Length: 118
Image (cartoon, rainbow, N blue to C red; front, side):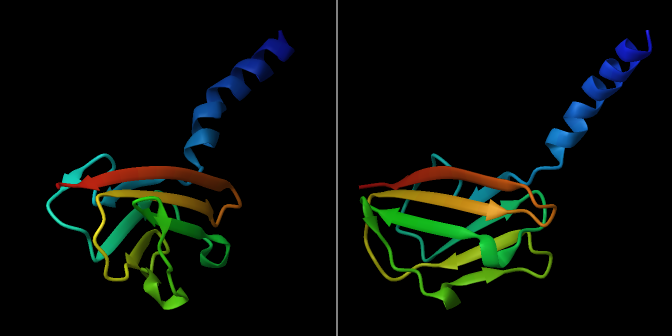
């Protein structure tokens, strides 16, 4: 009976543990959006503060990796919102790959894409 109680307690805690991981809440432009013109900036908002030194962002425009100088990545004071200043370009399809380490030590990664109207 005691063992069953322990298992039930652990099972009930799993959603809270999973919720502690940082994940992408939203982006601008939004994932899968079709926008009118190529963006000058991207914005990624995470659920938890992120370790800036251990974050990796790659942006592809029409399957070509865009060079992102270190000063093009700007985090807000909370460590949850990343603004990415993009170099001037004209592209039709974008893909953003991100890899982060949350302040709580949990890694996260993902991909989003969006398109520009022809």
